[in-house]
Length: 178
Image (cartoon, rainbow, N blue to C red; front, top):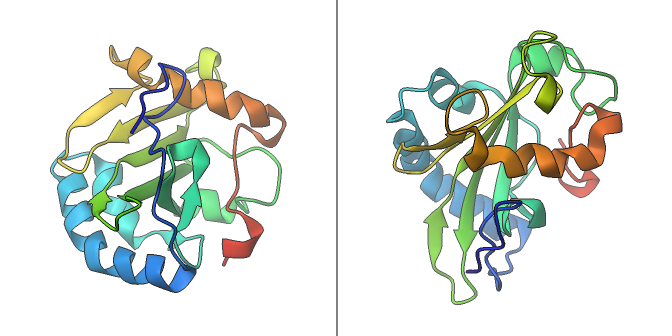
């Protein structure tokens, strides 16, 4: 693994390459334990997201999330606003992306839970009214853009600025969309 600076995630240099079917089997095996770990944080979103709409068919490798395999979830507000259809998300839309890593020698590790929430207009102009936070598999909160740990997740908004025209949202790659 390589730390690539405050602007990005720790990058797994040589992630294991999985077929879609194998990625789904691994996810099915580890999801429950990972979700229990996130829930230790007592964060409402970390507890609720497993019941939300999953937007991808199988986990996919995300270079922008450190070469981790990820799944995208959206709460009812985000789904109702047609996440992925363009336009701006309304306040209350929340997106969750759980993750796991697979090394080139096949070891599997649960990864961070990446979270975004659209805030009321004017709450956080520096992040275009998006809140970003990360919860680790042990339930610890790595950072939250809305508290004194904001610097720890500044790279989230820095990366999402690439897609400012799409309300700072990256979308599930077409090959993996539901």
